[in-house]
Image 1 (spheres, rainbow, N blue to C red):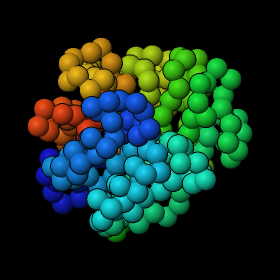
Image 2 (cartoon, helix red, strand yellow):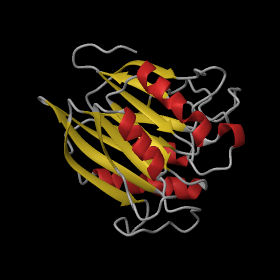
Image 3 (cartoon, rainbow, N blue to C red):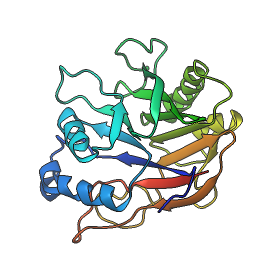
Image 4 (tube, rainbow, N blue to C red):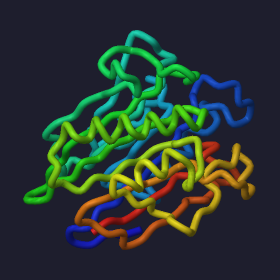
Length: 249
């Protein structure tokens, strides 16, 4: 998905927890597939979910022309971070990490949430252009997802209100649910509105009803192209989620 001029590419990608007991699909057996994937589909911004610290270090080595924000709690090797990698032609003017709770600066989880869910938000600039990028991973209960969406809207209010916003993430729900409704009510569109397909396939490559990886956007930007990347590499998949990409102008 080549880009021209002022266009830029955004990807959302759940790596799959690197310590999971996935047998043939373990991290050690599939990490090199990410090298091929990232070369085939270069992005200006990558929203990464479920990144253990050793996975983050792998990405840093293989995304030499990118910086990143969002690495959290380095004392726990099993910690799963939400990261935003951004091309070095962009400058990060401001960034902040939040927990999706009413105590966002403290490691915590919302009642009804299985894990301490998080998001990271950055304000980026390239020449005269500025964009806000957020990346997150929601929990499973719909009521928690709805509250998490409302919290994210509040967190975004801490950033300039005149900037376009893009949110990447694994939302653990299909568009059309309560979390999606919160984002819609606050001016967001989803890249694949009314064209939803599989994004979570459990390493099988088979079609499912799970379009849980979204790219949301609002403001003075438009999508030029979009793609759910279903590529396999020698019959294998880098993750149990498909990467999702969109080119914005």
